[in-house]
Length: 126
Image (spheres, rainbow, N blue to C red):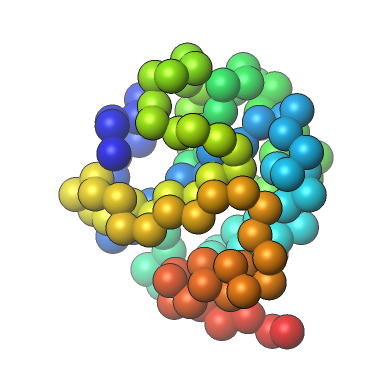
């Protein structure tokens, strides 16, 4: 993974990057899942670092996340094509060396959501 301003991948064993945009319908549809996911991650140890990347202005994205009830560690604004993120929403699980371990693209159905929870080592009450 390319380096991200203000984010140290070595600060946690894993980093979950969430690529979002305010005008993305699938991102909006995924907010309840992301809210559940970030809430569950807050209870785990060791907790992955949570990072949102977006082409939207950082201040605007922070307000969007707050309105959606999402708490993350970092919000990084990037220029279109500066990162290899072809679409939103996208989740990337990064290890402490900055290597991409898993990628999930689009609005995830129940099976994909369970896969994310499993990859992060957290259970899900269904």
